[in-house]
Image 1 (cartoon, rainbow, N blue to C red):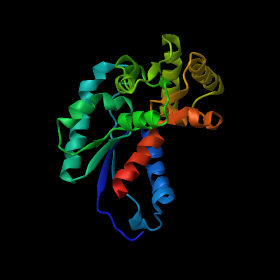
Image 2 (tube, one colour):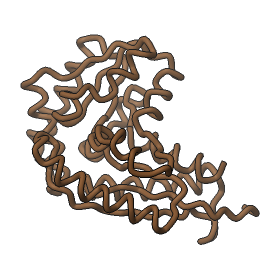
Image 3 (cartoon, one colour):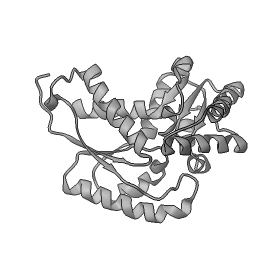
Image 4 (cartoon, helix red, strand yellow):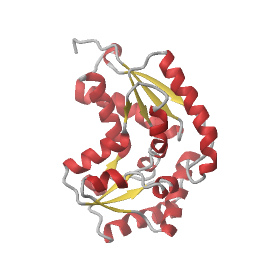
Length: 234
């Protein structure tokens, strides 16, 4: 790798911290695999801010306090002159419009990247697994509908199981019975007609091993990581 890049990408993380750690690792792996990074100065320059915001996975009353913390983070990114900002959380993308009012720094949208990938694969029906807030506000629904893609969300009772899994990953563990219940939610989405499923919460890629589903699962974190390295190097 001859060309040395001076670009900096800021990442708003901490929601939750395990997902941010996963994203950082995937960015570095893809820098090696896709762009041949070998030496220290070949790898992307990232500014990761792990922001310990109050929980708003299912409680919108915590959003104003979280927004104050995110605003400070974005101001900090402006001070160090990052070139792009990515968000290591699906649910936090609900605040993206407000974030964009705070800075002229362009954001790398995980939602847009995932939808573009699904449209490229010519999917017509997809399931969406995410936080209660993401489901309530239709995260992904509008952009998928614009592409003519039908969306399936878990039923209310199933959504509780998904939330329990998200919280278990954040807390550092999930037991066998919870995994079985979570897998049943995935299977039910396929039974209802979904051709593939979006892991629309950044903790869910860490919940179970999805290898058996192969291309039927869209890992939002992996897709964002690839978008970050593409923007960084190209």
